[in-house]
Image 1: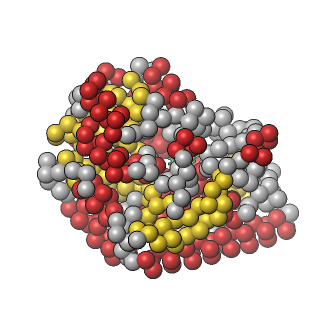
Image 2: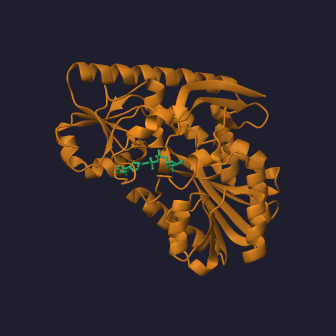
Image 3: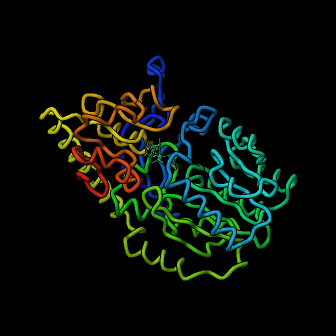
Length: 389
Ligand code: DWN
């Protein structure tokens, strides 16, 4: 049974940055979150049609930070060393930040956003401009053979039909192959109160508990779990065809930790929802007080996460003057839903008193490079609670 435990109101497409002329037709949907008492899966109450989110105008570049560029370089090295794959598939290859670490002859990629599929095809990596489905998996096996390594970063939780997605993995994986995927951790979200991990693209927020059963139902088993700090706290899950590898203690430890936190208990989610409401109240009180005292407040990082926060809290340009972001395709446009101007960083961080940290998952990288701003200004974040950095 699916129990709705959180209502984040009417929300836009989190990465749909707009020109002024596009505001009148902006798509919105009711963002609610459910807990399935049978599968233990946390999912959106209403899915958004994938083509509305993932298309030729998709704006998010996986290489948009040093943190993630280094993360994918290091991950590629780890997986090469551990598994020495002869054949590789990446699902959700974006701008090629991960697969560029592999020989193009060994790689097939799947990327539904044509603007990014064009980038990796131009780099010599065979990229299918497709959503990940069972027919696509069968096409890859037929044309290129099964895969020793299948990798997906911040992608599987975006796929609405997980049963088909994991069945397609099993179809495409070689007999001794490994499927490695990383997505935001439900446990970390519950612990950090980071409700902004929830938006249109994130159809699900994964627990190891839910994933174990989902994969088992599709001929796969989880054999290792690593906790990652990236993207606000993620899990890197290692899976294989059932019975082909020993199961590491990290799986049992993850399941026990989730049980201890109450991942099975509906009250856990209702308590989370209360914390979210408190976070909204505290953030609004802080911003309104700073504005009353005529401080200049901006936002740093035009993230999907901050789209959720601003639209849930009703934060517009009466509180946030503008958002600075390094992504050229976001600059000069208006943020989804609340229509706050997005501008480049250069020249727009001076004489600022406070900056909401929309990209709080890069706190270390950003604070290290914004020493001058921090001499007089302060960052604001809501994670794990509303505070000044
Ligand atoms: O799952 C997803 C994650 C991986 O990325 C996607 N569905 C959508 C997207 O979510 P996000 O927009 O919340 O991700 P980020 O990586 O937190 O976005 C960072 C944004 O901040 C980018 O637009 C780049 C920008 N940025 C910046 O302006 N200055 C980032 C850094 C590090 C900076 O110094």
